[in-house]
Length: 58
Image (cartoon, rainbow, N blue to C red; front, side):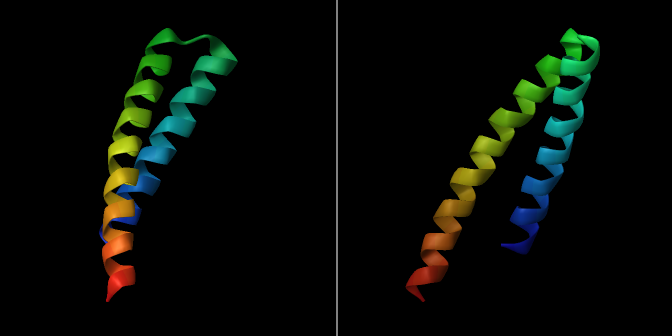
């Protein structure tokens, strides 16, 4: 689970950086990268939920 949380944090950092670039300088490519990071975070969050529920059952 620790590795999963690290991956989530990594994707969030990518998102935060690219989203800031899009907002501050109008960088369209950064917006695309930010959206891609959110899709990856969604997958990771679903996986986290699954793992967390399983850990709670033990």
